[in-house]
Structure formats: structure tokens, C-alpha cells
Length: 219
Length: 317
Ligand SMILES: Nc1ncnc2c1ncn2[C@@H]1O[C@H](COP(=O)(O)OP(=O)(O)OP(=O)(O)O)[C@@H](O)[C@H]1O
Ligand SMILES: [Mg+2]
Image 1: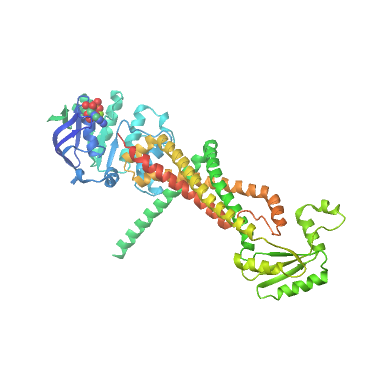
Image 2: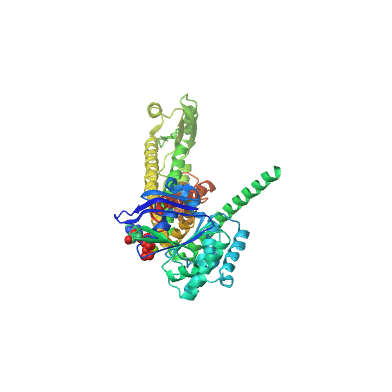
């Protein structure tokens, strides 16, 4: 599903964030991306989303070489990927329902289908009773779950998350991770960047460990 | 096969329906935004309205003056003033003689009393004239020449001046020429003014849209992150531009109608004094439509320019 082939990424500032990274993530697999702060985890996820482009090497998603994608092809690519990114959280000018519905509106779904799918996604993250609320009235954990509902509402084959449990207490973190496990069980490929080594070890999934932009072993 | 085609067709029409529905939704939503912040919207609408009303009003005035000069155009009237001692009968005979000329299309005798009555009616100096003991106005024959070129008219004037009983011959040719250049000048003025003000409208809508884009940065980033196309991101701002332009044009329409009512009285009196009928009908539907269309067009164009400049700078980081 995702294949990195000797990928390096150097930012315009001159700093090399990723150095010759190669790995393969099979379809329906689930893996964690770990490493110290500044190791390059977010950069790796952004390459997959085409928010950044590799300086060297090739990134393949679903067999397609992202180096060859033009600007116009980016939206369709992104619609196939669900993302939970910390600095692209919810929009507070609309309610929970409309936040989760956004990817469906973009994909051109009909009103009827939108309602059905949004409610299914919200019930999956346990927030069925909050759809009319403004997300600003929700707790951190609830907001995070709305973000996850928005990421999965379009039923993408691939789900990326960048520190989805960042500011949550251990119980909430476990609950969120549990959601990702459930999506993986129904066949979604999942890649999660996280600092929470304790939680990763407990879940026993594949772990890609980055250090100074290099892939330092798997477990 | 037919079933598959049918299914594809249904899916396509669903897509189309969803697309149209989205357009309607975005259009209504952006209109709702403008109306809920109606004070600042009204400011923008007024700026655009004044900018659209000025050249349109000038255009209407130039067109009206053009109509007046158009009535006379090509048929200069030659006024042949008769000597005081010429009687009405002799005047009529002179009229018949002039009307029979090869180079005259028509000739009309206007007696001294008639001329006085006409003058009193149109000039507003009725009271002054009433206080005079005798009628100071001479009788005249109004002649319309066959050919209207300056040379031909000058020959005719010379010939008429030589007629017995004729005091003076006056042509309004110069006045027409002057009016013509005023109209031409006015038309140029309309074009120049419209261009400047259209540019002003574009810039002010562009700037308003730029602020709207800046205010919705977070939303734009999220939309792009979850796969919104450029068209999807652009759409609300283009509709915003449309509503700004259309609202401005509506304001302009109201301003013009009010101005026309305000000008109707004096303008009517002025034109009647030149023997013209003048009826204020307000903006005719053609001009109204053109006004609304140019407002809407400028709005969308201004928004499109702003979107082009600013939208691609916003990317999810
Ligand atoms: N837009 C950018 N321009 C320049 N340098 C950048 C940019 N983004 C990241 N970097 C640098 O690249 C390196 C990797 O950053 P990245 O955000 O991928 O790390 P990370 O593993 O996600 O860290 P954290 O755990 O703190 O989120 C860092 O040294 C960072 O300073
Ligand atoms: Mg990071």
C-alpha cells in the first residue's frame, strides 16, 4: 500500500529531515512510526499526503508513484486517505455533523448518503448524541474522536494519524488507539506517528523507528 | 448492458444533482454570511453602487442630449425673419414661394402673435412680455432645406437673404455642431469614467475577497487536506464576489432611479423650452439588465482575480 524507496527529504532551509528511508507497508497492515522529536515522523506522513515532495527517491501509494503527480491530481489522491493531523483540527464555525460531513461534500455525495455516513462514523467513535453541538463545547478526547470520524467517514483504504493521542490521558489514549485497531480489523491500512512507546509496545503492532531522519530498525 | 448503462446514467445524474445542490448551498450560504454581517456588507455595496451609478447616470444624460441633437441632425432649421411691414398675407405668399423652391423641403409661416405665444409658453418670460405694450417679435418663415451640408445651407441662406421683405436669416447649424461635439465628448467621458470606476470596483471587491480568504484560512487548509479541488475551494469566494457585485448594482439602480426623479422636473422644463418632449420613464429594462449584469460580472471577476492571487498561497502545513 505504501512503499518508500530510498527517500530523502531536504527542506529549503537546508536541513535534511529524512535520509534514505525505505520500507513497505502492505495493504490492511497497521504500523506505528516512532522516534524522538524532530526525527522526521511528520515529514514522512506529509510526503504520503503530498503536502511535501521528496528530494530524492520514490514514494509509492497504491502502486502510484507520487513523484509523477501534478498539482491537479493531488485532491483525488488525498480523498483516498483519511488523516488525523494535530494542526488541522476541527472548524469551530460549524457543528460536529458539518465537520464530519466535509469530506463527503467535497467528494460530491448526495444529502441522503451524507446523513447516513456521518451518523455511522459518529456512532463508531461514540459521539452519536453530539452531532448538533459545536466542537468547541467538547472535551479534548471528544474533539479528537470527531477528527477521527472525519478521517474515516469517506471509508478511505488508508488512514494516517500524527500523534492522535498527543494531549490525552492514558485511559483516553488507549480508547483512541482502540478505535484505530478496529478500523484496521475491517481492512483499513493504518500508519500512526506517536511518542507513546508504552502504548505501542502493549498493542504489539509493527513499529518503524526513526532517528535523525533515518530508519533505525523495526520491531 | 442496458441495466449497467442505466445505473451509470443514474449515478451521473446523482453526481450532477449533488453538484448543483452544492452550488445552490454555497450560493445561499455566502449570501447568508453577507446579510448577517449586513453593516459591513452595506458599506461595500454602497461603494460599488456609487461607482456603478455615476457612469450610468452620465450615460443616460448623454443619451438624452444625443436624442435631442439627433432630432435636428441633418435637418437644420433656417429661420427667415421678415421685415416689420410685411403683412400676414404677404408673409404667407412668401412662404408659398419659398416652399416651391427646389432646395427647400418644407416652409412654415409663423406670425408675430404666434411667435410671441410660443415664446411666452416655453421661455418663462411671460410676465415680462405682458408688461410690454407691443409685440417685439417679428414674423418668420421656418424653412427646412433639402441638403444639410454647410456649403449648400450657406448658398440657401444667401438666396433667402436676397428675397424681398426678408430682414435676417438665422441658421442653428453652429448650435447643432456644438451640441454634437458635446455629445461626443460626453460619450468619451462615459467610457473613461466607466473604465476608472470599473477598475475601482474590481480592486475593492478584490480586497474584500482577500480579507474573506484570510479569515477562512483554517477552513481552506482543512478542505485542501481532505481533498477539496481548487474549484471547490474557489466557489464560495466567487459567489461572495457575485453577491457583492449584484448588491452593488442594485444600490446603483436605486440611486439612479432616485436621481432621475430628482432631475425630471428641471430637465423637462429645459427640454420643453427647446420644443422637445421629455418624459422620464426611469431606467428601461435593457439598461437595468446591463447594469445588473456588469455589477455581477465585475463582482465575479474581482473575486476570481483575488482568488487567483491568494488561494494557492494557502496550503495545509
Ligand atoms: N517546513 C519545514 N521547513 C524546514 N524544516 C522543517 C520543516 N518541517 C520540519 N522541519 C525540520 O525537519 C525535521 C523533522 O521534522 P518533523 O516535523 O518531521 O519531526 P517529527 O518527528 O514529527 O517531530 P515531533 O515529534 O516533534 O513532531 C526537524 O528538524 C524540523 O525542524
Ligand atoms: Mg511531528
